[in-house]
Length: 572
Image (cartoon, rainbow, N blue to C red; front, side, top):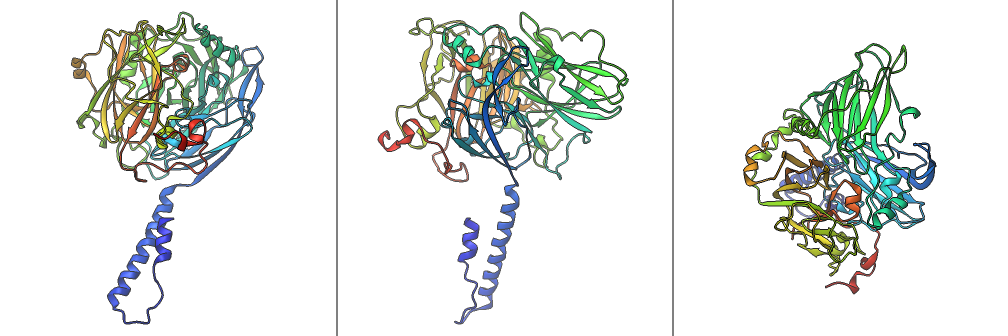
């Protein structure tokens, strides 16, 4: 609009007074410059893709027990979002549930636009019977991601689906186009209603072990099948949309070549199986180079006392028979998984969303401005009367009555405490049960700062962490205790860049983050019971200069709730 206004304001009428030729030349040059800027701006904006979604409850029966699930346009899982780099996504969500609802977009960075992130700290819930239209852009992104319902324990009821962001046609991709591609949404699943699961947590108990594993909303005998032709290569986009379990994926008799992890093209290593931790996404290629018959895709739990397994089928055209033989055994112990994780590295010569190589950003030579150590812990809320809580650096997050982003924008005091999360765990905090405090805590940070974050896990289960709005460079991970000497082992050349990282039991993971996206961003455990009970906080990436260059304005259709419904009453 600014360019159009400039063009319209330009005086293009012939002057009747004396005028020099140079004036005409400058006016004409300015006119053509403005027209060119308008064309370039329109081209850079990207096309629009519109979706209209109706969210309802519906009956499903994936584990032979009828249960209620969240459906989108009657589908479980929900519709796939397909777009390419820089496309604009207009998604109109109609909430036909009897309770408030929000969708969030795991991995979509929402550049300059945390207004659209779809978590309780940024958005008011969509009230029952109403709608909200998300206006987002896949700005400078490619890759495999997913969306999910973010309020309460809705995630245990479905409402999730795949997001595929394709590379623009003129940007080279570091592998030949596959014959076809398939989506694999995998996750642990309960037959218990999601509200009953929430009640279990609210009563201070732990969730039971899941009842099964779903592959694209189905279990083994219901047939999630993929048809292939001999000699051709196919792409599988895999996302772990479950609640708590690491899952291992393998294709019977076939190797898989890893090519992409959450928007980063990888060194193309070959694997017989891959661990996908909760909240993570990746892409693999496999070639149909075996005798023509059926083969199992096996998905099984990892690092659990019991093993759950589910299968899909890769079916060759002209198959001579069903999959046969015993299902292949899963891989080894934590050390096996740790070494596999270390082998996942960035392909430095491949283009990403832009033509320039991914390795042209030399993260290892940037000065770190701040070190943050984040240790998870469980239980022990001193005044909780036995209530189970999870915490980060001794602080268990409590949901506010007003989205934190709106409170910050309207300068409403008392909603959250800036600086409530310390940069290091309390002395002696080893992740065991201990006293924690409960509050709505926000960590402050400066725009364009470059930080080191060490995630410490003093417990016996695998942790999985996600940061909205950013990707992080996973420079190191190991078992044992992190120390400053651990930096000697950091990968400062080709570490993978992703948005969700695992921390192994009694271990640590170190990441480097360029905080280049202004907004209020959720840092959370992807183990959903832990997130629900407090293992999360918000990171405010702040700049004192309010400029459209750094952040988009509040949307015209923003829902207002809590104290933001009448902000003038609460301003400090």
